[in-house]
Image (cartoon, rainbow, N blue to C red):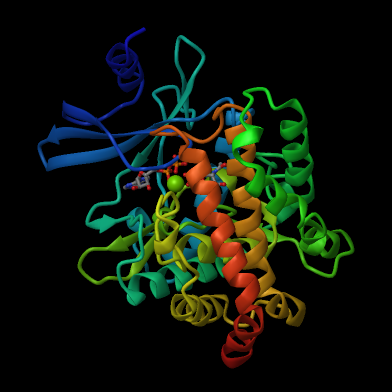
Length: 367
Ligand code: ADP
Ligand code: GN1
Ligand code: MG
């Protein structure tokens, strides 16, 4: 069915106010299909986010929405108690006409609707220290607000999502299969991964032994998963809650560094423009520790730099695996897009390995 026909069907299953104006593809996420919907109502224009959840990645969309419903209700209560604005400081699910927090269309796809957070922007690149600092405080604060949430009641929306050891094993399987005959083009990148097999265990082993605590974490803490208020410049809302699960605080910290403390974009082709930015790293450490407000253990603090290296390495492995498997996971917008992404990640890993002692010193300074 044509996309606009499907959209028409889906929109009719939600109780939107006023008259429909438009639906526009929106944002630059790699996973879901996102649209911005506009309606004209007596009180003026109202906008919403409509998303088709990626079913090949999220195998249990109903459980996923159970997680998001539960976590956002929890957050709404905390925001209310703190005198905040519940409609802007967390995602707000709009239920379908049948009362469910999603709609399954006639072809089996799952859709959901959120209130559109007005007057705020999600940035793909760090434009100022302040935005990055703000995102750090917000992700730290997010973790703190969920610190007393019963983590064991959440579904694991993607099994072994940040299990770097499993990611390494999957990479080796993709390499052995070499289904697209691409391995010969990426020998250097393959060697980079294989040389670091031991590194993959660094956090997983400590998680298993219980030396690192399991917490409710976001697991996808890119800068563009934070909405920054256009007026105040403050980070107001953490979005993209698909991967909220029990996990390691170090992964949340690390993913932000991977994406934000870089001088280049995640998919920059010119590697001379991509390097680890120690200044932005420091800005983030300061904000994150303020946001966590004493919630992290000594061991977690000690290993924050490892979280940054591991998440960057793991993401590079995932991009390279997807390249070898024919680009079926991450959305690509050009040939070799996943390979370009792989290369930026490995460049950052190399830089961070070289900066490891100073990264540790920065944590000491702010802890
Ligand atoms: P993906 O998993 O594909 O990254 P996201 O949930 O992050 O999908 O949404 C993609 C983009 O849509 C975000 O980066 C943001 O720009 C925008 N977006 C998502 N939810 C909202 C919202 N409630 N209000 C305004 N913009 C939003
Ligand atoms: C995906 O959904 P999005 O674009 O925010 C991915 C993350 C990766 C990221 C790399 C569910 O995030 O794990 O780190 O791309 N999300 C999922 O940019 O796999
Ligand atoms: Mg996103």
